[in-house]
Image 1 (spheres, rainbow, N blue to C red):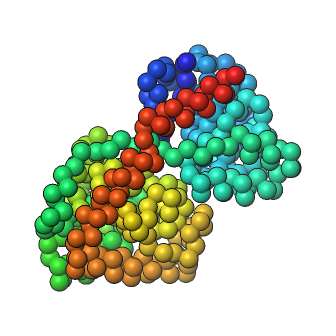
Image 2: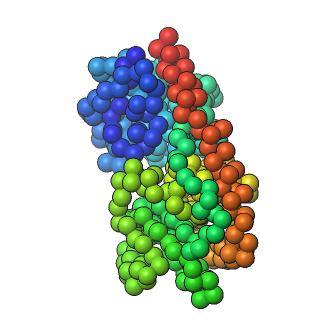
Image 3: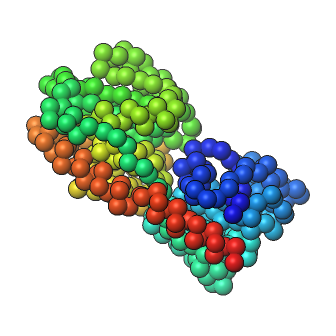
Length: 361
């Protein structure tokens, strides 16, 4: 079996490329959309391809659809087409309903739920054709070697934060809370792996500059890496006691799986897919009233309210941990167990191969 993919980026490497041992993977050139491109904005075209033919048996996309005739399946983290709320959505939805789209693979139940709600606005027959193709398949994750003995005496308490969109993932709230807590508990170290990505939809450039200056000024307890290769990150995770991703901007949370795979319990919010991959048994969930797929617009009253909620709950959780660090070892063991049971790469490969086989028959 020969599977074609377009991009060699992190999501594709995480979900598609090399996941099945006896499958051949080949990168295919970008399928341009002649003529029809005028219907879409540049952002929309990023998730739109056109393959009449390709040197493979089946195409596998991430968040992409194919206007050509070549058979394909596509993973998605929110909805397909990605631009479902735009004027071009009717055209894109019709493409997803076509027979050449064999399966759409939601990476979470949350994504599947969003897809169901969005298709409710489509003609009934078209919506049914799309939803009949949908399956849910959580990402695979290998367990990562780690030493459980590190929890016997977690001093200094070593925390890690991973994420490019630092502000949207509540990085400022993390810095503020930790600076406050360290006035009493000085034996805390934070590692931040983030390029402090700016995006006018989710943050202001001055916020990123402020965060960067703060981390540089506090280099005695904050270790900031603007970039590390994923392999390097995975190799160091086993050193940490606690992961932080109290995010307001998330679709899934791949880094949560990676931290759990190293038996690092994680503090997340309850938005999007987080409740599917984190729990009070494996970590901590900070409660936000929005949850689901709702994102508070950056800088709005609801955003500021959510930021305050995160600060208050995060501080309370961290103080509880510092008073009784034994909870870390208990949640650590459950986090590792959860990965082995629900994200087994062998089971994922078998399920994905079955999807491919049925798509080609």
